[in-house]
Amino acid sequence: MISSPYEKYKQSSVQTSTPGQLVIMLYDGAIRFAKTGLEGIEARDYSKANLNLGKAQTIISELMSTLNHSYPVAKNLFSLYEYMNYLLIQANIKKEVKHGEEVLGYLQELRETWVVASKQVPGTLSNE
Image (cartoon, rainbow, N blue to C red; front, side, top):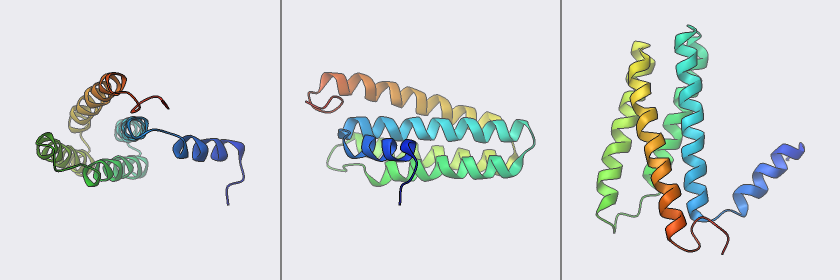
């Protein structure tokens, strides 16, 4: 049961979002968790790093599972997502932020691409 107003807001936000907004929300979450995981590595708080890098991996896996493979770009995105998950695992195992920073770059670029694309296709970003 959802009790806090913030949790109610989050649930309502997800339920009323367009597909484009949901993808952007996934990218936002992956970026946030990857950054927090890298902060954990830098602070030598490996529990924090492991937890948050794992959450970023989970979101990337969700992005992989929602790809529409009837479009040729899906194959390339799937490969990129696989590579990002590999890099997050390497960052977590080796405790090196450089792998995670590479992932952050990809996630931020893909997020911006989605924002632009969603504005160009009616009904994908705004509730039209």
